[in-house]
Amino acid sequence: MGDTALVALRLSLVVATTAAAISLLTGFPLAWALARGSFRGKTLLRALVVLPLVMPPVVAGVGLLAAFGRRGLVGVWLFDAFGIQITFTTAAAVLAAWFVSFPLAVLAIEAGLRGTDERLEDAAATLGGSRWYVLRRITLPLLGPQIAAAVVLSWARALGEFGATITFAGNLRGRTQTLPLAVFEQLQSDPEAAFALSLLLIAVAFGVILSLRGRFLR
Amino acid sequence: MSLAVDVRVRRGGFEVAAAFEAPAGETVALLGPNGSGKTTLVSAIAGLLSPAGGTIQLDGELLDQPNGDHVAPERRPIGVVFQDLLLFPHLSAEENVAFPLRARGTPRNEALARARALLERFGLVGRAAARPRDLSGGEAQRVALARALVAEPALLLLDEPLSALDVGARARARELVRDELARFAGVRVLVTHDPVEASILADRLVLVEDGRVTQIGTPEEIRTAPRSRYAAELVGMNAFHGRLDGEADGIGRLAVEDGLVVVPWPEAFGGGPVIGLLKPADVTLSLEKPAGSARNVFHGHVTSVAVEADRARVRLATAPPLIADVTLGSVHRLGLREGALVWASFKAVEVDVLPA
Image (tube, rainbow over all chains, first blue to last red; front, side, top):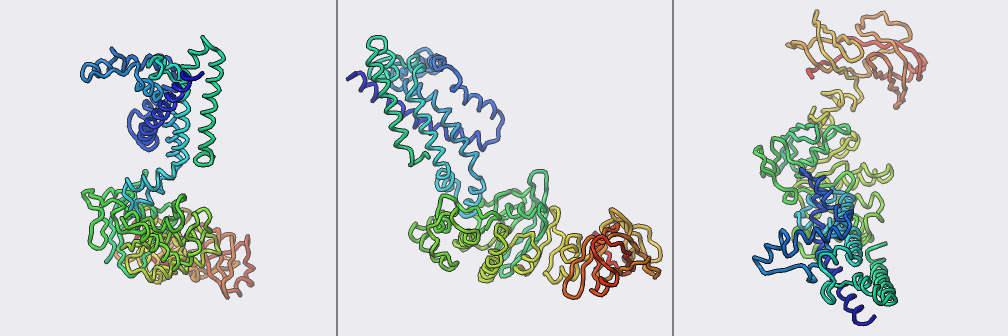
């Protein structure tokens, strides 16, 4: 263990936390549209949202490469116009982790929105609450547990992400080598270190879930 | 200061069309059976539903215009108490009451102080910190009323305010609602399906049936001259709904769903749908087929006998069904009880016929 482990652990925490935060921000509007919206193509949108959950992560990584790779659909434009290359950067690791984890955030928040009584929001409106005020004071607080669940689920999924990361972001120490990637690499040279790293990953995940218990989760 | 409503509102496949006015200083009750469209009207007045047409006007300001212009609910000076109260479950009683003030920008401390003062008036000062789930039905109802009043709206709209309460709490809550209605200077609109509640709390009744206003009047006016089947049932009159045809000698035949009633032909009437009203006291009961001049004679079983003071209200499964009001002496003489077979008769001229 030692350096490799600490570097990978730090990177894993940064990547998972950033990905979970972005999952929440992108997941909320999507969940809102799915729970409250009525528009054509809603069924299609829901299928697309769930897709990353059911596709093998390696395939997700290939898909991300096709989109954001150096020669990908978006990637080529990003590079030509701005000189930005995403692959093999920490941003790529975050993007990979986000891609596989945001559906969990959408599903958790959508279930929460379906479970809240919309008439409470109606009542708040008749009491003088603007849409923004009602969202802030009524909708979001009522969704508290579901938002916490969305964060924990997507964070945990992002922390464990392996396939999409190694395919799309590569395995560069300090930049894209998250803890699961480090475990995989160590397993081939130093199995005992791999076991130790796995234990560390389990301990960190368990600690985070325990610390949230009682505050958001029951 | 007044509320003037003249709208058509659609909800699902159901359209409610209603016109009525509610001046300040008077409590107007929208009274009608469940499903008649009262709550749809409440939603439209509160601004939660856009009318399909017509206008809603409060104190001279058009809240809904024929061209579809619509003032958002949060900009309407209206305090609503909803049928199931809709207290915010994550806020304490005082935070619930402070909500309308906070939403309009009052600083937190001032809003909470005003909320507490109002809770004190409602006898809830010790419950200010309680969450809605820990309040009794009566307490929750008072919190909802305080929340509707705290921002001093121009219109107080109460949708079945007592329906969530059990019988014991209801009497006390009704008194509180009556007192608060009396001290509220703006326009007061009460929605209820309970005629007792309506006649105790309201100065004027607007009867709503099947999405239409069928009668507007004081409780006294409606008691003495009901104008619809629902109103007649409310005040315990017999009502015959049907088509009136076959005029002869000032008498016509009113075909109702399950029978025929002979009634007077109204002056200058060309035939068509009418409602015939008959006081229960004008129905005569007998054991033998009556031989007198009564044109309407029916035979059937007694379905119920309800004694009120020295009289009894007898319901009969005749065709059409009838309600008769008889003395206790008759009850004994005729052996009236559930299941007994009797003849019922009344004169054609006793029926009051109105175009429907």
